[in-house]
Length: 145
Image (cartoon, rainbow, N blue to C red; front, side, top):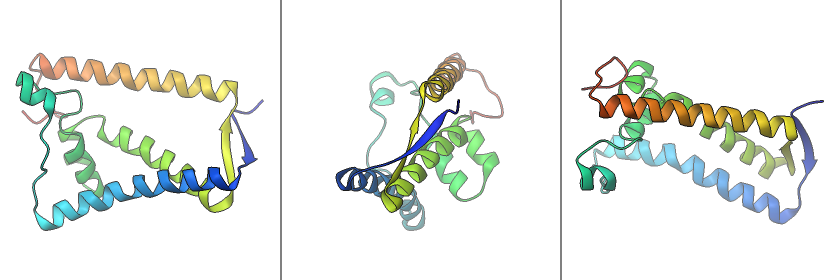
């Protein structure tokens, strides 16, 4: 038994997938425009502002920016999980775009849902361990300073 199946979706579903795909596609465009224009981000991290500590996602935006420039080493220095999270979001966005364009959607079977759940828990655990190391002051190649 497979982990996914393809099924048709109705017109309203296609519009929803198109909206999600468009929003996800605008993220790299937004990051590229910020990079090209030199405009700084207008919103600071609330967790960092309140505690003075880096949040779990500090450096993730810069990690994605570096990845979009093709600089994998810099991406990993900004946030070790940046490339993994970027790939997950890109695959999700591609699936939404495919569904919007074709009218067919990939649905996970029970086995596929279990696999995604286990992978999600693994990435969440990695993120928590990575954050704990950063809070403890660990300095290693994947964290600048």
